[in-house]
Length: 97
Figure (cartoon, rainbow, N blue to C red):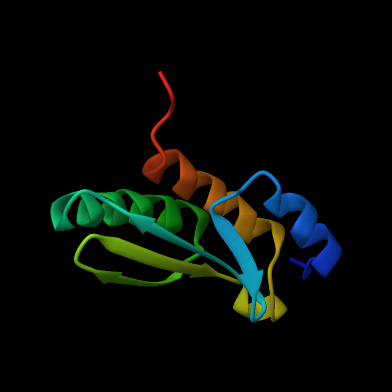
């Protein structure tokens, strides 16, 4: 998997308003109502990570989940990171009814 150019990353980020690009990774922070909801989302995300065999750098403090995605073997952001970001968005961002 090849590393995306900064221009390609910025273009792809237009579809991901919650995410920012810096330090050769895409980053997002999500706030939940409580720890239980945050941990539940993390558990659901973990299944997506395993399915893609791609794992985030993430941390959780109470109801806040911070996520950084990059592909270590490519030394930067690849399409795989955006595929995982899309799966994460489907889990953490509720669809408008």
